[in-house]
Each structure stands twice: as C-alpha cells, then as structure tokens.
Length: 125
Image (cartoon, rainbow, N blue to C red; front, side):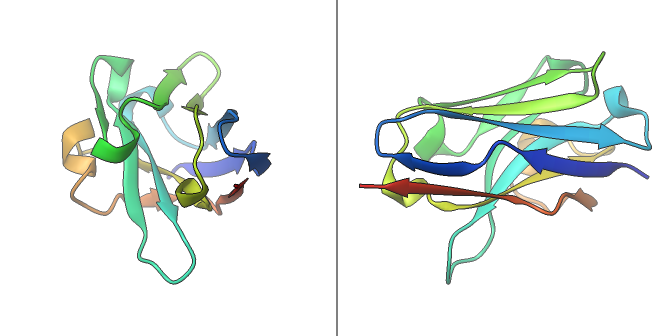
C-alpha cells in the first residue's frame, strides 16, 4: 500500500507558476500510474492529469493540457505537477493519487485506489 504526501501549494497571482510535488512511500512506486486531481469549493473532485508507470504515457484534462505538465522521478519516488499561466479558476485543493491497475487515460474517468491529503492552490486575480 502506497502513502502519498503532497507539497508545493500556495497563494499566487494570475499568470504565475507553481510546482506541486507528491512524495510516495510504502509501495513499488514505479509500478503505479500516478495522477493529480483537484477539488474547488462547492464542486466535485475532478481529474487533472495522469502519468503511466514508466512515464511513457500522459493524459490531461482538456482545460489544463497546454498549461500544466505532469512528470515523475522513479528514482526519488516523486511525481510533479508544473502549473503555468495560472488562472483564478485553478483555485482548488490538489490531490495526488495512485493506482496499479489503471492506465493514465483510464485514471481520467475512474477513482484511483490511493490518495494524498491534498495541498491548497489559491490564485488571485
């Protein structure tokens, strides 16, 4: 069973960038598809991006595809989400997620098995 801890959130202005990090422990990290989800106040949790085991495949929510980049470092058991050109509507709690059976694309439509506690991203206008 893998444990996930996010970091890197904060308060930024529109147009700024942030890099979120997720540290994984307790499992065979390289065998997991990793993803990021977010939940804004009063809204349901939504998929943001995912990266397959080995990093060969990525999948993004359409609204972030040209602004966000997901990556992983299997040697460090880390997954990252680079957020560029941030908008106020990107304000949310961002969650790291993991699943051993899903592909990156499948994670866009399903609920992974493992979740972190989340990190807050607030974008002011």
